[in-house]
Length: 509
Image (cartoon, rainbow, N blue to C red):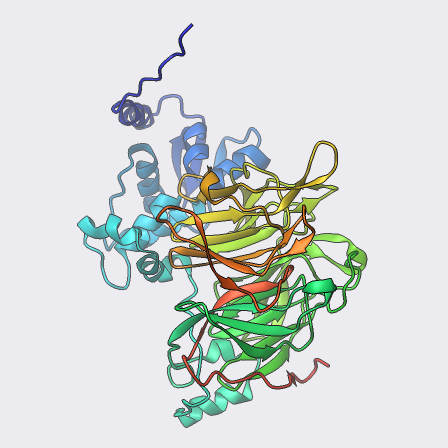
């Protein structure tokens, strides 16, 4: 019997959308009502759950049989405009309604509507015919979304040679050491010139811990040693905020059980080549994820004292030099991966309750809540997640086989936030765990990692580009490493200051 051949109708999706839109216009079969500002808008639960991340989480999680959803902080006109978009695919924007429409789209987490609003109201008004073209350029998208999504601006670093400060601003800058990232101005933070790939700490041969900070120039793959961390570390996290480099938590002694992690946080100032110890995290953490979200640094989950896993989440605000608790992650987790994209924080996979996870959860900073997204194709831990353009890439890691043995997850998969779907990219499979990966423009950089089969640590540096989607070897780490951290950090082409011994902020010994 011959296999059936699928036939695809090019007109059916549009007809389906028009049909559902007609039902909505007539108020037929509506089974839920959205309320904003005292105005009621009947709608279809299945349509809202399909198009709105907020509604999907609400209906599948805690809303139950509720038929009225009251939305706070949004205007009825903005909500109505977003609903028209859900049922027609067309968003009618004007200078008079774009802000309230963007606000409603952000609360409902309708990603396509958010992107269109951001493009429309960007710093330079995007002509309607160029909106699609602009959205394909990541750098342009980030500029367009400053107001609506509170995205972090381009990374800046400083040179010790450039000290032509405006005196009053400089005085304030140096008197408030912890708040310096928030006090940056063009006078105290000249533009950096060259992006470097930094690799910090990790476990080397014979499980010797590294305290080295290595910098690879992306243009030619050459390495140079920037200096040392305050202490050798592994299973730590790194974050770049306003041109400053932050090192968070981790372990300073080799301990497979992870019983004694740190809560210490150190900040590197490239302008003066100095380390400053700032306020420590509220909880000791290793095997966790740290990321920049808006103007704060966020730490998610990990192993705590005595190796116990935690679901706690906390955020550091430099201007106050304090940490505060955020909404906990849905489950205690360690060895997970994460990245930020379009002002949202994504956490994928990890290890919890004796098994590897395939969860993908997204934190909405405006609503202070976690929502579930479409899960990974493969459960995994000790992997890496990075964003490149409008896609998230999940690489490497390991999982437990049915027999209870650890095996590699070699498949690479990519996630589209706009469609909430994963796709497996078998051409760039990679059998490594405890690796580190960062995205820069349209490229992914992988450093180090370990092999379960050979029990060896890797020193190769790989890069993958969209053209062909295959890994290319572009160099080697100065030594094999795993459980290290990496990031993209902007530095002057020459005259990079070598870090000196750390300074200690008053009150943190």
